[in-house]
Length: 358
Image (cartoon, rainbow, N blue to C red):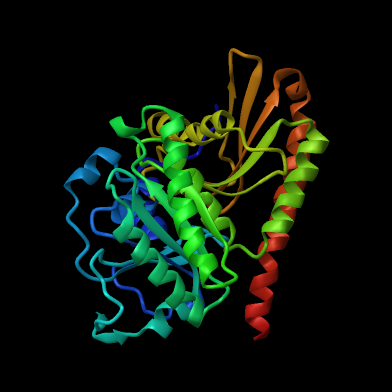
């Protein structure tokens, strides 16, 4: 296994790269916003901490409730750049909301908003209060910004009430039917996506991946490049991961199999852990990057499949799943990945040129 992670620098990258400033400006350099909303104790802050701050799910049990607006700027790489606004569960739109001494009105909240992630505690029945809050939020947001994506996380589907998938599906069907009927009664053209999530498995990362992807204008280009790559290399599946959060920002057009996704996601953890032990630089200058152009790994599974990880850009990793017989000519695969890496670099350069021109 080839690796070039440095333990100290990688650990330090989580607060500065993955979790942003303590109190960023409201403007956020015009970066899109993801609003985390829902009733108290629904799990909003826990989701944010687990996905973007690498907190252990069990540690979230000791988190205090959010009492004021909490804004974090996520800037892991050129694609994953946005703000997360975590709202108090008891926030009322009729009340004044102050952040950093500045009054925040509804137009400021929803104006530059890309997505609203509304979290519903699946274990907190009945859902009448949560659905009423969701309906009110959707109506207010749509008034100021009709282009907002509405994402509903039916959260905490990991307790004794949800031992079978049938119970989870029934819960989602009930919530989805109720809120859809209410929205349709208002004759509004609003599309909502629903996800079953838990911080104790990969479902929360899968759901947040779908949320983030909708905020990436280059997504069709990335998907097309991945399609070309897997066709050229006879790969089964490929993911483009944000290494810091383990959110995948793009994948090819083949259906996502959860088992394959979990394998590729877990590979990042394995590579990081092994690199922290065996991949540290001994020069002692402390300047080694946690993740650089030489980062790569090959894991051969006992079912005849191969997991292959390659660095493609700053804190971006390409993780591929392919059959061992198709990995025999690794040199050709590496050449194709280098071409893919070059194309990704060109995709990055376009927005940079636009900023310089403007």
